[in-house]
Image (cartoon, rainbow, N blue to C red):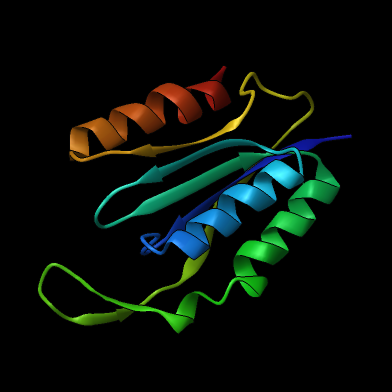
Length: 125
């Protein structure tokens, strides 16, 4: 049996309904991980077993209608919202993250240090 950790990139996760779906479905599937919110990039990282991963990837890639919303970037251009699976890592043991949490990062340095400290570092151990 393996455990996986997919990294999703969502362009805009400002909608409360989308944020609720991401968080609630992870909790219902007993997945752990984090959501990092920033102005130009939002990262969703979850961890779980094979069945959980299959259902959560289906939710993120197909069931949530990301393209229903448009948003404006820093230049004022209208952009379609979308979710991308950036990469997925598979493990033979579960890591030490006990719940899903949402972290808002107002500055770029805070964003990179948080992701490195809590997620990427756990993969390299």
